[in-house]
Length: 234
Image 1 (tube, helix red, strand yellow):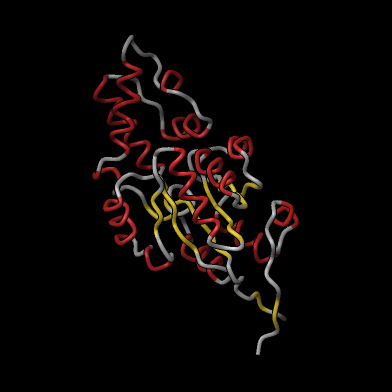
Image 2 (cartoon, rainbow, N blue to C red; image 1 turned 120 degrees about the vertical axis):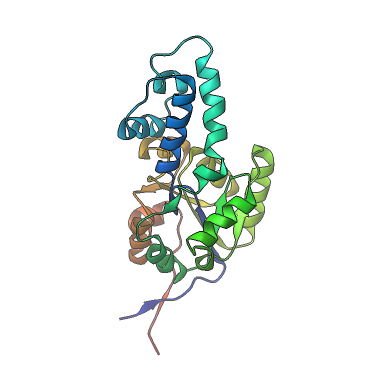
């Protein structure tokens, strides 16, 4: 049986949060910390994550609340998410190394992230020995126009780019940059939200993407993916 050859000029861009690392513990700990500081009622972990994934705002997550507490919650929650102590809660998704290795058999894989702190992100990659599985870490600007310029430049460097991303922000940006966009639904967005943002297809995790690539699935080809040729083993 033939084996898949590496695609010349192809690349995978994989978002860090969601597809590669599980962010749920960090998000829930941030919620519990801020809820405790403000004296608010807490949600259980499953209900909190359901609300986050459906895009609920602070007014729906924090109930009941008093005047002024919502703004304080939103501000403190975002700050807590990026604190060093909570960033250490991020852990690799199950079997992510196996899945990335499967993609690397087809094309190089690079990490992309909108995290603002490169050093903290690098510590995460080093702590879990994830760095060696990716060609490069590309940190994207928080500014939409700058982020679009960055992604467009990177996409143009290859004949074909498949972006595996888990946030609506990254779906929109990668689509506008010209990538084939695969929404990965183990981050902070539901499959429905990823599709509404413009994902060409949606998978549950990187393992499903590996299967789609290996099988040259009809859905992936309809999304614009050009499968590699097969060659006979020598």
